[in-house]
Length: 166
Image (cartoon, rainbow, N blue to C red; front, side):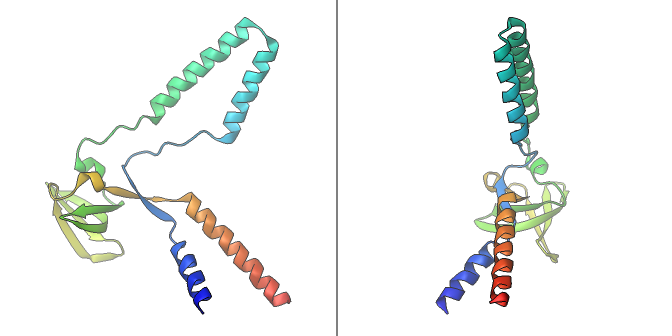
């Protein structure tokens, strides 16, 4: 019985694909493996040619690509709390020592009007000075957790089919 209880507890803990991460704005996306392999192949081809022109072109291209990447991945930090907490997004905030998971509705001058997630009738109002800005975390989709859930589901289906066959 304990074994099934632990198994149920572990599987229920993996069900949520969303995580709360500090900071807002655009996410930095790493290079795809294909792009990295293509660049490595291009550099290898250029090295075999042993031409100074080709090497100069590769270094110039890499310099331009690095400047473009740096320009794209620089996140402009929001200046105020109004810019951090945007309407219709989910956040986890700390107010006066209490933690809330909220969906922001709107800003009414200096007051944040929000409601508890999945409870639109429970409206919360906080002044911007009450909210601890260092603990604001935005809800984001976690691909890793979703992949784990998918693998566990496939394994469970496989075990179920195997049990039916036996």
